[in-house]
Amino acid sequence: MWPWRAPAITWVASTQDFLVPVKALSRIFRAKFRDALKKTAQFPAVPPRVWRKDWVVHSKPVGSGEQAFKYLAPYIFRVAISNNRLRNLENGQVTFAYKESATDQLKHCTLDAQE
Image (cartoon, rainbow, N blue to C red; front, side, top):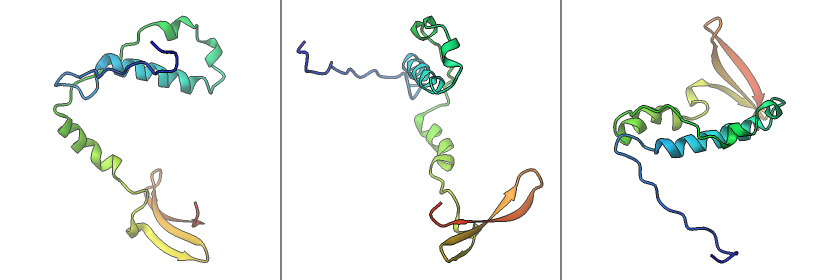
């Protein structure tokens, strides 16, 4: 192998029941978890051997990928705020309505339009 060449990447196919192979998902989850934990004060308390072990992510089949996307689509392809909640746009400020979950009351919030 030449030192300036990247290693070959091989495709790992998943089974028909899963979108992502469970072993690959486990490695990704471990790496993401480690990266997030590094940003906290608790990271030094975790023994280094934890990151060398194989992790197992519990994963259940949800049917075809099409079914999973149909389930996730309303959450993924959603706008931050819909037009019917906008109340006013004036002098660089926007006012919108929201429902406070604790009281179930409709309230209004005004923010700088750049936010």
